[in-house]
Amino acid sequence: MEVLIQPNADVGCALGARIIAKLVREKPDCVLGLATGRTPLQLYTELIRLHRNDGLDFSRVTTFNLDEYVGLPAAHDQSYRWFMRENLFRHINIDPQRTHVPDGTAADLHAECRDYEKRIRDAGGIDLQLLGLGRNGHIGFNEPTGSLRGRTWIKILSEQTLRDNSAVFGDFSRMPRHAISMGVGTIMDARRLLLLAFGPAKCRAVSAMVEGPLSAICPASMLQWHERATVVLDEASSAGLK
Ligand code: F6R
Image: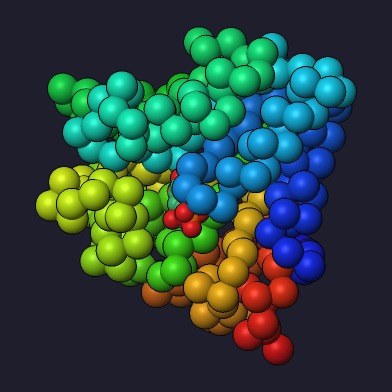
């Protein structure tokens, strides 16, 4: 695992954007795995800037998002499909047909999960998967004690995740309790992993991920097992490392 400690989140996001931009330039038809949440927002802003100012071309890029809440339609402003459209897709020249987010409203959710795995395989697999880190060590919505080999499936959100993500839903009771998420096995199949974690709230999870034993208690510790995992941290999130 390659651990890159940057002075702050802005510099870390700029570095993450450069890594992705390099891949897009070298392999214009690459397959990117994307994440939502607060962490990658600045990275997406930087990719938009590189598209506008430096002509970074996304026209042949394919994307697969990690996850989506069960029950939220694409038009819901807290759905991850909405998040991606607002924060990245509508600002760059990506073909909407090449952007994939699991459908949390599918009539048969299990069939949707199996189909998502097939779509990733049919696209030739993911070249680079972008990841954030949950305070409890989750990646995607793979919560502690879940399978470390699991595939895309319906995941039950932990209490911690419900607390962390519920603010934007206004009322805790409106927060979805389930999500479709790539499994840890799906994530590990990506040819490269790029995880970003910033701020003091991520400090404990970062220590468990980088220095802890490989364990289902911290699903992100599986990055230790990946052949090509890059972790970008800031001073605050890395403060607990030995
Ligand atoms: C998002 C995702 C989650 C987040 C994680 C961190 O698609 O899969 O694992 O990356 O919960 O969220 P933020 O970045 O909001 O701290």
